[in-house]
Length: 270
Image 1: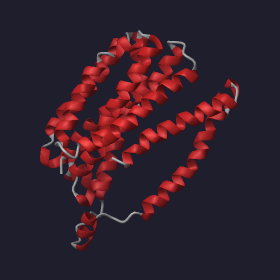
Image 2: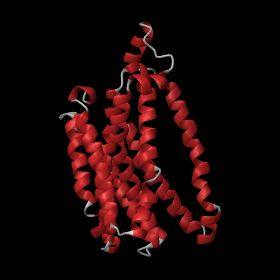
Image 3: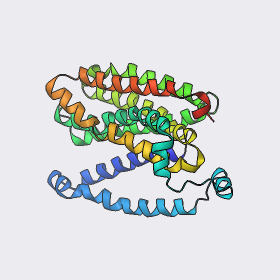
Image 4: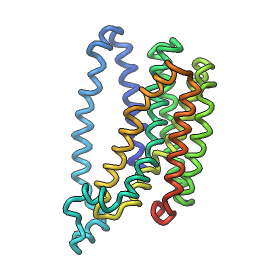
């Protein structure tokens, strides 16, 4: 749960930085060079993250594997050739998490300013409210997951995401209040899924390929989900209507639901 809090905290910090720059710089300065300042500042967090990672001891399970010479020599290849089922299911389980996130952050920000004519400042404030709920539900779901099966939790949250998808046109049609509702509900669902997806993937892979397996799986999901979601959403709005964004998120949710059902409780709940 706590490592996953990095996402909502990072989102809040980035919004605060941009809001501060918005008040210090004019629009031309912000969009020509000011937007680079947070990226330069993030170097500090990269160094801090590396220091923390190098300070953390390996898990007991990994140390046992080292002692019994069970460490994979080429873990990346083992993931693809020895665990293709987990790779496939894990990738598409994770896809909706990222599609949802980039629809209610990156694309929502673009839609708010370009289609609803909200100011950049207003759109960021809306996302800040959603980011707070993202963090709250990350914590709450982490607590709940200690008492129920993780697979069941993820199945129900994925179903809820599919239901939520059909409200998207109504959110878009109701101005800033609708956008705020879309952000709050969407990022709350995001908190529920994101808080557990790391544990789901870690549990699914055996210790000797766990680090590589989780990394490859989540990054493949990022390519299929995060990388293209805003572009697909804008294409659907330009050529069809906002209703098609609903169909897009629903389809993604359905695929993830099928993949969660494809896992067993023993694989992802221990």
